[in-house]
Image (cartoon, rainbow, N blue to C red):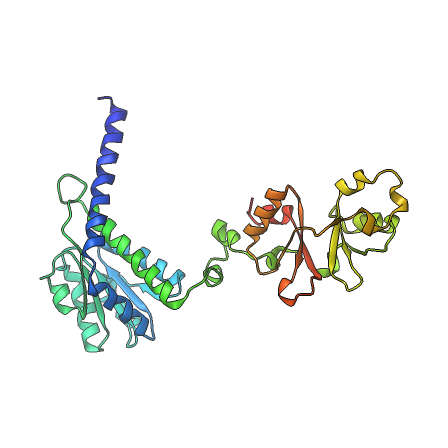
Length: 323
């Protein structure tokens, strides 16, 4: 077997072992998981997530996931807790402690602190008879599973199970809190994810910048409005001020003969595609790509009036990181 083939064989073996461990975890979950969700929902403060070594790295990720999905959470290093950081753990909090063995000595002080102030402890460990499990009000036992390293000493499957368990807790809490994409957007304003969660109203050009003409307007006036606003299009309104149609360069070409003698209503394409201000900007990109257009009028459909509130151009979306 060549070196490259060996690399792939090793990778597939590791992934297969860890996938089997996750299946064991799925089957092993019991009332302890439900108790953990209920305990976290009941606390008024934060979830303090702790762990040492590899469990500490996983704990940081779980704390970050909880915090970004509506459950206030913070990672506290157990060793640092013994040197002043116990002040971060207060009545009203809950403590989620991760330890595969359940016998990590650095956890002793934070466990004692939790007991002293009646702070509920959710313990996650692979040994149901461990000190951590004995000191925890809520117990989640990780099933026995083969570590993927082949020697049984490198945390691999065990940390994968713990990480997946944290994700399961976060999603269960999200659903109970009815945490929506709008809430998620508030916690993720930056980066690619933040861009995907931005709303049309965040990117659109406001009413004063929207090129609009009345249906009775003559085409010389329409061309001036298109040129003045610079989007290459104009919206056409009916007598009640509702968006009735749109004039694009395609409409201009189709009516080139005698163009200046026409009215806007005679040249426009009726019933244009529009979008609401509270739609995701990503949805607007999808509409523009599907229709092969570069501008989309924004209409507040909830009011039933159909008046144009703004205009979104594909370049606005591209500048925001959407495409």
